[in-house]
Length: 415
Image 1 (cartoon, one colour):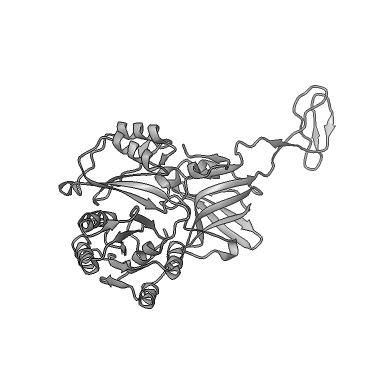
Image 2 (cartoon, rainbow, N blue to C red):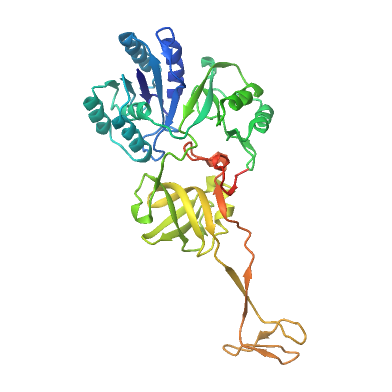
């Protein structure tokens, strides 16, 4: 059977992945867990998400269906924060996965769905489920079960002892940097080299101590063993759609809709402009229209790349659309336009720069009296290169594919 859970945490605490970790322990005497538990990130633009918009799915072999339903239900009731205004837990237990459920996942990771969309499919398929309060968690629970992952990564999440929840985390930072050095690029986004900080541990009051992401379970375990920290209550290795760009839709500017994420190709149609706070904006144009692209202040050093764009550069952008603006996650520079600079001509006799002879009268050397008609243009060397650029780990969205995973491409990784 397949168990899906979502929307059990709040901004104040608890965590759906922790609930799943406890549930796996409680279910172990009743059946056999099949494969890795799945941590499924859904549309990052979802309005009611708490933190990373993650749902969990487990596959279990067992004939004790009623017992499993009861234990799962009691665990959800015990480890959900029902006091949260946007906490609306959902629990789904299905006997099979169908093409309709896989299609539902694909919509949930790229579009905004309503609770009724989930309820309708659950009723059509005859799937056992329980929704609490508004029941919004049924969307993620059903999507997580239906998830088909042609590309996937892993994350090991370590959980804190309960009496430490809500207190500052104790992690030996030197060992974290050492673990990153030992296992990168098989693990990533543990630390942010450019900004000099750890990024694998949250700052909220939830049970998570830290999470190590990577493509190789063995490398993740090596990194875990190298890190010294406060005592750990439990740990779980999840298979996940993180770092896969599963949320990205192919399209043109004319296709763009709010609360969805796209890969768009076009030309820079205006010089990047900065506003108060350090946010950068520029227009991107293709044959169907124009959209504003933004590199906000939290993207840090990525903005230095965006600043180097000029009108006519051909680029490909990845990002989510909010309020008619595409928030950049990464960018591919395809072709650089020529950047020219105009100079007053040089006198051929004395090799000194000529001066203007007056409006519309060209240039003249005051010493040699030589004359030239106009400015001399020269193509400047661009510091910017073609290839992929990305925001730093401190600004990375869970679903965004890091460049370290893009084999065979010309990449400029953030480190």
